[in-house]
Image (cartoon, rainbow, N blue to C red):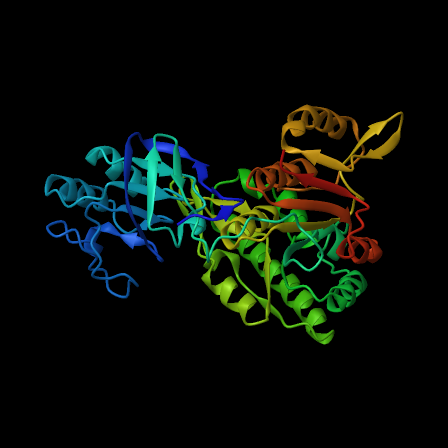
Length: 416
């Protein structure tokens, strides 16, 4: 039963990425955990047999199966094909972060499959209709709420830039304890709950850039250097959490590489540990870090990417970035003009001038995660997902205080 407003039944339509085309209508089986098809599904009965899976015993047959992704061996693709051959297969798959096993299985078995869908919206849905690139359904009256415009009092994710919390221009790692203390005091005053993510600053960008680590093969020397970089991240995170704890804030460190993984080209997040901490009134603290990709090479999992994925997965309406700049700006006649509001459709027209500005600028500090351009790219993705973001001056704690009161002194990034 859908929501009624002035006698009109509300329908929702979500567009996604087609893995295998098709149309169908049917009952939804929403899986609350990833599923291994190899060893986790009986191809003769279509039932889930995976130990410890919350829906063990449920049948996939003739259901529209909604799940974040699959896990396990690539043999899982052939299990999906066997399900189809035995007429025990699902009607369709709806996923958020499709992996190669599930994609291959859908294609082999010719099962309609739509990816890039925010599946949390479907957690209470009984039936839906799949129509090639979109799904249609009626929200459940008691569980669905229209997403309001962000107002003071909403929970948020805050990103503390590495250039704010460390002395980024210092050749050796050095924390800016006073800046962290000032921000901790401001955050302690707010009544709003938040997740905190921080950058690496001089604890990451300098050593990675100085040794050109991202372009070098793994040898004994580079393994030692990467290990030192990771150790630096632990040190910075520990110092920041200690300062927050001294200010009576329950900052709880979370190692990002323990909850993020690569499946093919897809970055997948297990948000459960963060969600548990947040729901129990801790402040989860994550940070940008070295990260092994699907090819066994090391890349950087940036704080900006962590913010984006946490906001999408956990349904946060707002991301606040504290940087060493007062907002996103373009220079006009040698004057910095902050752009107060940017919508997603405007970014392509601003991105190239910003790149040219960087080429002719004097900023020589290393940033191995893309700097302001990379940050804006991430926030535009957030806006496309309906998440509002702000870039404000992290060196001025009053900027944060004012924003939490509804006064924006920086740049606001919003959907079209």
